[in-house]
Image (cartoon, rainbow, N blue to C red; front, side, top):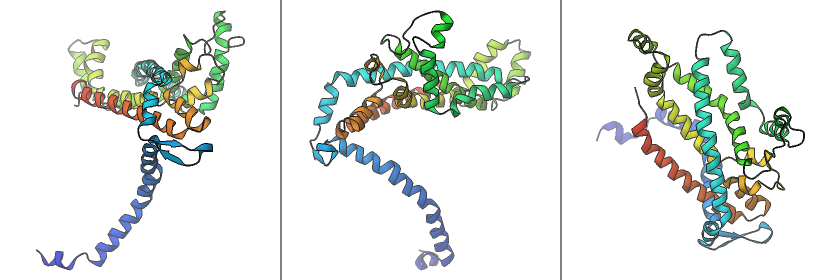
Length: 299
C-alpha cells in the first residue's frame, strides 16, 4: 500500500469532494423527493385499502390487484389506451418524417413553416382542448359546418376515440418533426451525392439512405411517444366531460386512475391501476429494446 493511501485524502481533495457533493445534492434530493419516494409509496398504497374519508391505510395484500385485474373497466380502459397509441404514434411519426424531409431542404420560408408546425407544442393543453371541442361541436362546430354533416365527433362511442387520437397526432407532429430535422442534418451529404451519381432518384435515396441512417432517431421518437401515448391523461380529461356517453369507450387507464384516486378517494385502488400500467409499459419497453437490435442501424 502506498504512502498516499495510508495518509488518506488531502485537504484539497476533501474540499473538492465537499463541493462535488454540494453541487449534486439538489439533484439527489430532488430525485428522492419527486421520484423515488412517490414510486415506493405507490407500491405500498397498492397493497393497502384507503380508510374512511381518505384517512389511513389498511394492509390488504394483493386484494386490490385481484379486484383490478377482474374488473372489466380496467381492461376496457387499457384497450382504449392501446387504440389511442395505435393512431397517435404511427401517424405522428410518419407525418412528422415527411414534413421534416421537405422542411430540411434549403427553400425560402422553411423557418416560418417549422415555427407554424411546432406551435401546438407550446400551446396550453386547456386552450388546445377548448379549440378542438369547438371544432368537434355537433351543432355549431366548424367541421360539421364545412362538411354539412351532423356527426357527434366526441360523443359517439364508435368514433370518439379516433377524434381524440387525431388531436394527439396534431399535438405531437411539431415535436417529432424537430427531432427528425435534427437527425437529418447529421446525415452526411456525400451519401446523397454518391447516390445521385449512381442514378438513384429521390424516393430511392429516401428508402436506402434516409430511412436506415435515421433509424436511431426514429426509434427514440417511437419509444418515447409510445410511452407518452400510454400515459395520456390531460387531453382526454379536458375534452371528454364526465357526462359524455362515449367516456367509457375513450377513457385511458390514467384517466381511470384519476377517477378512483382523486374523485372517489380510493387511493389504494388507484395506485394498483398505476402499477398495472407500469408493468404493461415495462413489457412494451422490453419488446422495443429487443426490436432495436434488429431494426436500428447505427452508422
